Amino acid sequence: MRRQVGLILIGLGAFFLTLAPLVRFYVADRVVVAPLNRYEVTRLESKNSTYFDEAQLKLKTGVTLLAKNTVRGDVRANTDDDLAVWDSTTNIYDTADPDKPIQIQGFRIAFDRRTARLVNCCGAHVDGNGGVRMSGYGLLFPIANVEKRDYDFYDMTTKQTAPMRFNAVEEVQGLSAYRYTQAVPLTKTSALDVKLPARMLGLPAKAGDQKVDRYAEAYNTVWVDPRTGIPVKHRKNIRNTLRTPDGKGSMIVAQADLVTIGKDQRSLVDMANGKALQINSVRVYVPGAAILIGLTLLAFGAYVTFTRREPPRPAAPRRPDGKFGDTPPSAEPTQDPH
Image 1 (cartoon, helix red, strand yellow):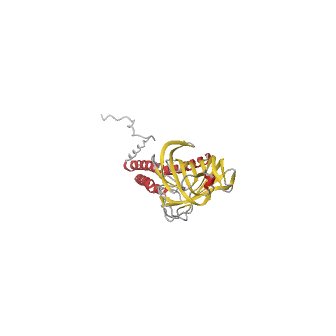
Image 2: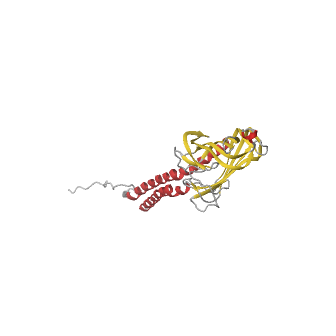
Image 3: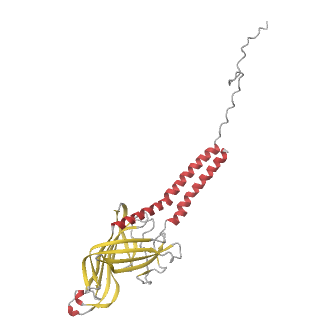
């Protein structure tokens, strides 16, 4: 019976030692990935902003803008478990008139769930333009493997890739985050089929109406949780202008310094902490505990199986007087043979 118990313990120990690498390398490979059904709403605010009100044909200054970004995973669009498809929509409002968005931007990205690198498939587009070719990264940094180096990120406004450069380590809502910055150069984003009065473009009135093109430039900053690749704070310093083809006339249509509001920063940090715990569980905690338990069971099982137990000592015989022990010599006197 003792040997059987020992062998069972040895078998359990071997099972836990086998479980450790299985969790670390097989289970983790399926857990440490971007989700298919992501749903996230974040808000960015910019005070003392400027934008051109097309309805009133007036440039408004000193206003507070709010950008509401919604990211939603499209599970039905995905035909490959290795890829995720997310839709993003950003509505920008003047807080003085929150029912009327002044700008709407939407795009769809497809990316590798393990590396977060963009893939051109599954209906990816920017503002309905499915002909764009995306490269680098989009909304996430490398999953659970963020390094202190530069990454190429695709800018949805200018439809070009620009480096996101590592700057420093800073604290965001109690989380030690990596800060990256991206400078998006002045880029023509579209040619408009309208003409504007010369005076609106800073030109003499006698120049008459002028054709204009839309240009954009930005300086983006993002703070990332290095454990998960989840951005926990954004800052988007943007400037959109209309310019004449010769570049002599121009006017601002939007200028803002958008920063993720504090409440949403805390929500993103909570999300990152939860994902980090999940990653550490399958990479460290569960495999480590399995190894410890397995070694303990093996050692105890070997001890029970291979150590001999001393046999019990036989009971002493019972004496005629009812006590245990050897029978004492007779008390009767011996007769002298003589």
